[in-house]
Length: 200
Length: 200
DNA sequence: GTCTATATCGAGATAGAC
DNA sequence: GTCTATCTCGATATAGAC
Image 1: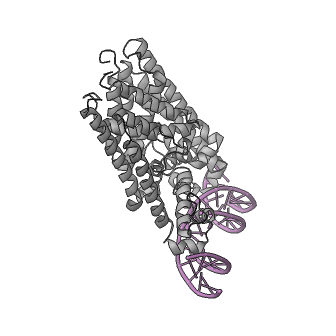
Image 2: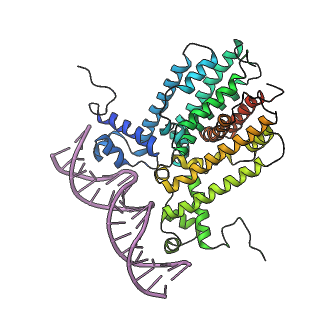
Image 3: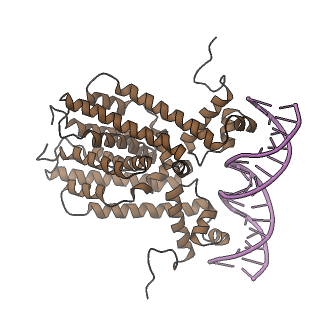
């Protein structure tokens, strides 16, 4: 018999606490998440939580690190897909997302207590640094292969692409509608299209 | 004798409370801002605050509305500047900003209690709807004048431009450095350059 | 490992004097 | 209009029994 994966019942308490914290951090942020709320969602008692973790910051660190790892793995899977650079970027931008929930890592950027703590902040910084570098690599590759024009700056364009994603989430939440996210993505892809070797 | 503008001392209590709330909302968000913190920053007592406002949501509404108005006025001033569409968009994107503090309106998008309240949420929604429309108008004008190619979609591009800004703030905060913001802006302007009539 | 009791403090407000 | 007193909860733990 194997345990069911993806559900919180059936795994150990420590695991349930981390997953509950991840959800709450995503929904309400660090300041808006209380130990009590975490415990209730995890179905764990006060004593349990403080047995496994030293406190809220410790638990948040475990949650943030895991969320950052997952984001990275999901993105990397997209970048390794076959196709031209533009096709891979397009696949990444258009992959299915829970747009209205926003980015679980980008969100932390607005949490003063997270950004004030170097340890909590580190995974956030690392995630975006990696993402920008990785997309720049894909674009540079496309340029070397002659898919993209020389006028396209890989590093700057990569940062723009990540910014469009993060900003797209903001606009979608503001409108309470995922359409602005899709439109922002369409807009940048259309701009990129003018830099393909045949079009440019 | 005229009063000094831009300082909190010398204006009435209600005004100081609103300005303090605006600052705290920007720095710490709605959930992270307590009535006590507002009062201390404003130099006002408990009783004073509850005399002028019914509570934290009421005060936040006044603060959010004013912040939204100011953002709109500042943006509109940029759009009315002389020059081509691209020059006006460039001026808007490159105008001086306190990048690491982020966007005081975009920030609210991550505040669950703000987004859950239709009244607090409205100014946020309106601000971005207006901004996207306004930039789309500028771009459409540039296309009509023949400054921009017909391949450029004003509405989608406008949403992309706003997303780059909002995402640029996120990346700058993640890196604790304003450089990613500038790079994201450079990237999108470079992409737009390929759509100018002479270049495209 | 988990539970319950207890403790401190701040959030968010109400009441009524001045 | 402003001040102080008071109130109720929840946030965030710690202590010690089981």
